[in-house]
Length: 281
Image 1 (cartoon, rainbow, N blue to C red):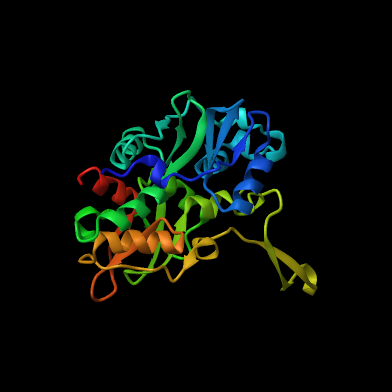
Image 2 (image 1 turned 90 degrees about the horizontal axis):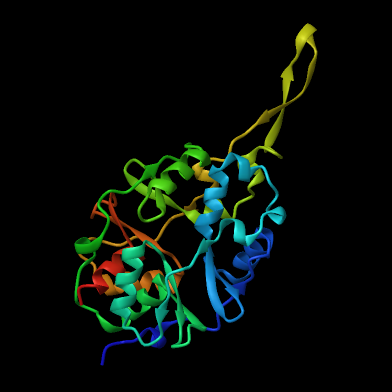
């Protein structure tokens, strides 16, 4: 029997209201270690907010100047979210996520009432359990990977994340991965660092005019090396894709840099890769 969404969906679902603030949503996401919340009116989903929305706010000068406790959910939520019945197959769920470019689907019963949510993580777990030996990493990995060095600015990283299909940027040194940056690393960092409201600085003693010395502030910009997750878990091109999926789920991560025998970056396998594999089983 084909696996159904209800077999792998997460429930109960953390929900918010259209009038809640983004400060509340951010705290809820951090506290619960989740990447999205469903917006409800009554018992039915009317919108969704993801960590990606916080990255978009950073890129919007007008919105970035506003404190998060003055921005409401209804101002930035994706309205009329794509939903899926709890009786649908996991393959149908994967196809829907790929078609609509989303990473999670509110799950509803026959009356349209919210009963759960199914995410890329849930589908990666399903693939790991049900389809070992079906494919290798190299068959579904992303060959084109956005990369930066440790000294690239967080603003440049944000630009790459916006353009990245997989929503990840790999930090490299000498062609080898030394860190990885996800959208959540920017979305949940101290936004004031990017807005410049409370810039980070260091004090150094410096020579002033007329032979005097004094403390001078040198303002710094957050760099890729400051926000990356160091020493990322990697995989090889010939690894079983189901094992890669299991590794991502077990470590609560969204992707694995794929490295050659010499340790050089050759690609990236992600939960998006797993969705594509699911549509072919």
